[in-house]
Length: 255
Image 1 (cartoon, rainbow, N blue to C red):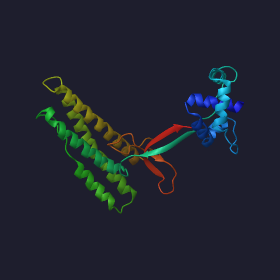
Image 2 (image 1 turned 120 degrees about the horizontal axis):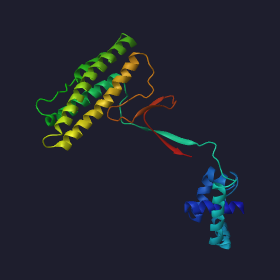
Image 3 (image 1 turned 135 degrees about the horizontal axis):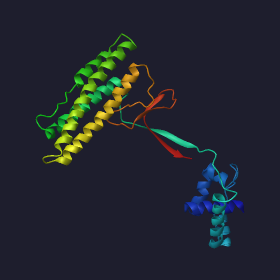
Image 4 (image 1 turned 180 degrees about the vertical axis):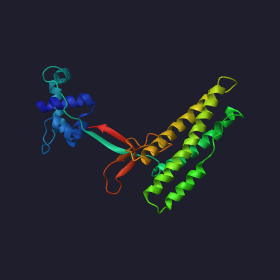
């Protein structure tokens, strides 16, 4: 009888039909454990469950389920979880393999493109943002054919970080000019939106420059930025032999 009561509770909480109930309980270790049905045992046939439910009546079954839920959530028999099992997987981000020097090239290009797109809103006397992608990409190509070891890589990365820092200062000066001009003339909303986009990209580039300084100083980076376009992507260590580190997001679901 205990099994029937628990099966009825699962049916009421899930809204399944009798055939679906039997199929789902048969395929689930958790539901089998809850319904006190061993792995080697057969789940009662749907016709058997249907006959017992008809004999008891819907009012009695509903009252039993209500009492069982009340007993499980209140009083002495309250269930207290000791642990939770989380099933997680990595959703891969659409980014290339990230390096600090490559992120500098992306940041310099993104700042220059956004500044060129919105500079007409700031007027002719507004600060300009130089496109320093060529200087950063030159260091990126030098790093690709380097023979001087890690010290050369650190030097080139530090130089690229300093170049991007100049672009960040120019971009923030342009954003300030856009905000100032938003208080006079037409198109205030467009100017404020353009300033917000510049500040957003500049903030992401600032994070890259900060982690470059940490890398050059030999410090550990706890929360590494791996993309300018996708700021939520993170490096995730999964311990796989072929691909020990993946770049993306962790999707978790409780089990």
